View (cartoon, rainbow, N blue to C red):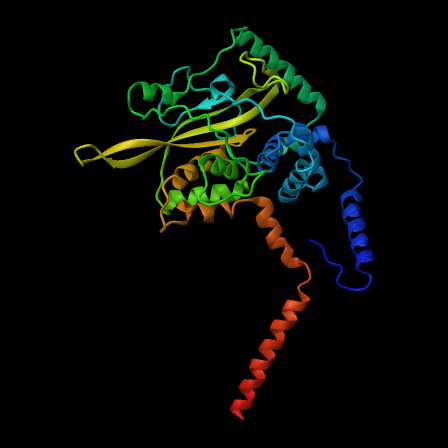
Amino acid sequence: MGYVAVKGGTEAIEASLDRLKYDRLKEAEVVEINTVLATMRHLVDQVMSEASLYAPFLAALAIKQARGSMEEAVFLLRAHRSTLPRHYYSETVDTEDMFVERRVSASFKDIPGGQLLGSTNDYAHRLLDFDLVKESKEENQNWLRTYHERMKADHPDKDLQFFPKVVDYLRAEGLFERYPLDDTPPNDITKESIQFPTGRSERLQVLTRGQTGAVTSLGYASLRGYGQVHPTIGEVRVGSVPIHVQHPYEEDSEQDDSFYIGDVQLTEVESFVPVTVKNNNQKEELEFEIGYGISFGQNETKAIAMSILDQCLQKPHGEFPTHDEEFVLLHIDSVESTGFISHLKLPHYVTFQSELDSVRQVKKGGESNDS
């Protein structure tokens, strides 16, 4: 959307862009892309998730160009994504093959394979660390050297370990329903406009692309009472999964000719939601359903909130907006919502003048009647 509403508008826009560049350069500091990658990992992860493009370097570039504005960085990366050709689709990822960096469960104290706390702020004191003001590369390298030596001494080389899913053990006990494998190809919302009612694959795509704050806010609203979905986290796992693609000219081959092209880091959440159902004797009993969340990078709060909304949207309820798929899915997209609100800053002279004329006519009519 663009306007050139007055004479000289083009020159004014160019001057505004020059001023934007001046504001970025005036402090005479240059932020390297590798610095953003190394020090702002969670910001990079968030931009990749909302842009639905796993490209850490490009996400860091977008953050630099946007001067740290999340909404602008996502807009930039999505715009770039729309220019890229799609040569193939990856094979279905099995998260049981994840190389786990962090894995915790709020449902059990002990889980098969053990809790793995990994890297997280969850157990840190929320106090400003003023030592960061004067940190140096030399001190950091010394700390890293000591840390690596300690890890090597405390944890000698072991065989690669894959962690089982917590829910699989509950299914083995008959506590969770088993469903047949559904290999139906998902609908791609980036290729086709979303239609209501949606399928689950479409809902999950919109949720994982959703603005982190919006998804978290609606998940929190559900916890507070708008539908009252209060799950227990069965498992949060963060780690890297391998990505494979089929040979473009051998799709119909009976042999597995897939090729490994790299890893992506994911956060996956399975929430256990208690629900009341009627058994064969029409008596109410307690069961559990699963809410699912997944996101690029380490993005745990969003993935948990996503799992809440996933379960909400599987149980439509007209009374609660968090159970209304049209309300949720159409209002969490960062580019759509930011763009529509931001467009209010652009010229609306004609419509506003028309409204002013209407108000003036009403006022004049009222004054005439009073006299």
